[in-house]
Image (tube, rainbow, N blue to C red; front, side, top):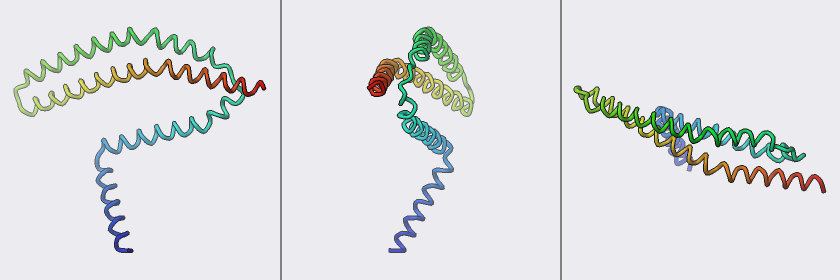
Length: 150
């Protein structure tokens, strides 16, 4: 049994070493840890922060109005800029003569397209989540206000 534990610990140690050498994996783990920590802190202090039922409408509505007013023009700018940037990178990729330069430009084009798609996915998620988050916040505030007035 002791030998099996040593083998398992050795495999886990080797796996951790391999992951720590991969910069993308380390970055992903850091981001996931920060997101988990932020979620844990938010959930921990949510009940105490809203226990008195503060009115958050004056702070929330200007922010939501600003986001709603800026999203569409920014989408237009990001879309146009992304298309122009991808076209420029595509032309550079097509005109590259050396194989190393061609591979470098191909990678830049792939990265630009991934970033471009990621921006659009995040904006769609933002637009889809504003309504439910606002309803949740209003419901939470109304529930705590009703509970504290009883």
